[in-house]
Each structure stands twice: as structure tokens, then as C-alpha cells.
Length: 491
Image 1 (tube, rainbow, N blue to C red):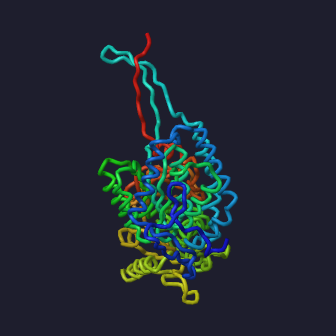
Image 2 (image 1 turned 120 degrees about the vertical axis):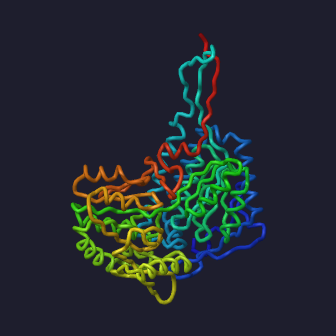
Image 3 (image 1 turned 90 degrees about the vertical axis):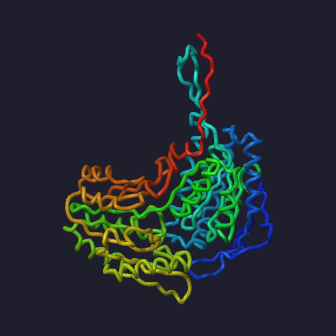
């Protein structure tokens, strides 16, 4: 399959079809601005068709109750994805610019992690009996049941299109829901590839999975969030869009799970191993070109080691390999599109104008005048309340903040953020690091060279970073309603 032959049609009710308007749009490779493929441009009517199919299948079939069949289908999906792993990785790199040096975390790890949720289909306690309880003279047994919401409206971002799609689609389906997946306009082909593999490799019934793409994210997004037939919205993206989804879902009191980005602090305590701390800090900021929600983009450094840290950062980041995302030697690839590149440029330029020091980078990169590039950048001497310290840059930019005082002061600076998705602590003293970690207002915390991401550990945000969690049994239960049934107890 060549890059111009990727499936780009909508997948609705078990069939691939063009949008009602027959319109398509180009999907652009951010590295060289070539056309990766074309995708169908869905209208509100197409979205309605997908929801109709998902609603009918949720209401009229045994998909929600036949646990053994669901496990069979989703194990088939995992096997189908395994067979096409290399094609998936090539597509994600082409349309999202994710470097091949980190692509295994976007694809291989996600596919292998499906085991955890597949096992839960048949091991989860779907019903639980409580002992008899007497009230008002009535002795009653009680049974707790977990049941799927019904139809899940899943909306994914462009920075990790396959990773977030597999989370939402797989987790929605294993819990017995049907899914309408809307891709980001920039990266629709990865999601359509997922639909194609599901259609060709599994016995998943028509209407269980539906995938739509639209050049204007507002058209399809507004149609989804306005439709009362969707019971649960599962969204990854910006806080502004997440808040709009929550507001629209309030009409009808629909459930939302929202993962909404971060400005994660990496605390360098004065006793930290600076070689490891700076190495991990750079890798966890620059990975995926800084276009990741839980990355360590805000380094909070104690005054005693501040100058040493800056020296290391300037050397490491100033020599960081960047460029062609298909070259496994590069850590930093392209920015997704010109609009985002200009946004990054503006944040760094304003920080410089306000007195911050740009140690390296701080400008666009050039690769023959093609693609969207920003050099790996370190911005030092940043005030903790500055725009660049408080706002998500979503690019290869590390912001460094100096602090003085004890560990509580480090915690205060780190917690000085509306976000709360992730956090990092560097210290040679594990007990000290744990004491700091316990005080950080973030959904996940990473000590030294550890990282939270795994299928069994819940992942979610505090503050404007989100509501609800993904992964783990807690993430599984986000897709389920709880019902309590009482019946007369036999004496």
C-alpha cells in the first residue's frame, strides 16, 4: 500500500462510504507538506447517520451483554492490529509527524496493552450481591450491576491519533458500548485504518464502531455534542474545547470524560542526580516534538544547582537531533501545521521580550523551505507567573524557573498552575521525592527515571487538565453506569 492509497472514506454501520456531499480534503504531511491522502469531509447529516447506527446497535443487539463474544471480537482486533503494526506506524509518522524514535510508544505499546482490558471483559465483576439489609420492616437483598452507557461519542486529538483512538475505541467496546469516533481534521487516516482493520479482521457487528472525519472540527463536533442519542462523551484535547463539550453535554445530563492537556512541572531538588535529571527532563519534554499533554515542559530548579542545570540543558538541547521524523536518530520532528508553529513562535518571542533568556533554539527551523519546524528550545529565567510558564506551548520548548527555599517552596511553584495532568520529581533521596510527590496537585507523578503510562494505572487530570480517568479498572468503570436492584430476602 502506498501513502496515496490509504482508505479515507467514512465508516458507518459496517460500511465504508463517501460523505453525503462527496467532498474530500487533503491530509498534509507536516514534514514536507506533501499530500498523505484524502479524507471524506463529513457533514452534520453524516454524523447523524453514524449516531443512528450506533444507537440502534446499542439498543437492539446483544453486544452489551454477550461478554464472551465481545472478548472474541476484541482479541481478533488486537491480532489484526499486530499484523499491520508497521503500516500503522508509517501512517502516524506521515500524517502526525511523530518521530520513529518514539513511535513504538504510540503503537506497539498500545496494541500490547489491549490484553489488560480484553481480560477485564470476562474477569470484571459485572454483578455483586450485598447481604440482606432491613429498613422500614422490609428485609431486602441488593444486587449491584454495571451496565454500559450505550453510545460513546469519542473525539481524538492530532498529536497521538492512533494512541488516543485505540484507548477510546477499545475501552468503549470492551465495556459493551457502541462508539462514534471523530478524528482530528489533521489526522483522520489513522482512525480510518483502525476501522478498516476492524472491518477486515473481526466479527464486530455493523453499527458497533463508526468513524467519521471532517475538515472543520466544529461541524462534526457540534453535531455530535448536540445529539441527545449520545450517552457519554470521551474527549482528549484543549481545555477550551473540553469545557464547551461539558457545557453542551449538560443539556440532557450526559456523562463526560475529559483529558485536557497540561503544563507539567519537573522539580529538580538540590540533591538530584543532575545528569539523569536533565537527561530525563529533556527527553520527557522534547519527545513527540513537545506535542504531548503529559510532557515535562516546565522545569522548576533549586537555586543551588540552577546554573549547573542550565549548562547541561544548553549542551543537551542545543545538540538535540531534529528533522526528518522517519530518521530514527531524530527526537524532534515537525510541528503539525503552520498555525501551531506561529503560536509557538509567538509565545517564545514574547517571553524573550519580557526578559527571559533563550539559551538555544528560539526560532523556526528550515529544511529546504518545506514543512513546519521549530528548533529545540530552552527558555530560562522565566517568572513562574509568566505567560509561557502558565500556558501549554505544545512544541519543543522547555521553560526553566528558578526557586529558592525548601521543598515546600518547590511544591508551591509547581502547583502554581491551572493545569494538573502530570508532574515529575528528581532527587537522590527516594523518601524525599515521595514526600514531594504526595503534595503535588497532579493526576500522575513520576519520580526520577520512572513513568506512569501503563494499561493498569489510571491516568487523568486535576484542575483544567480534565475530569475522569483513562486506563486501569477505574478507567474501565468510566464507561459503565451503576444500577442497584433490591429484592425481598427470604427469611
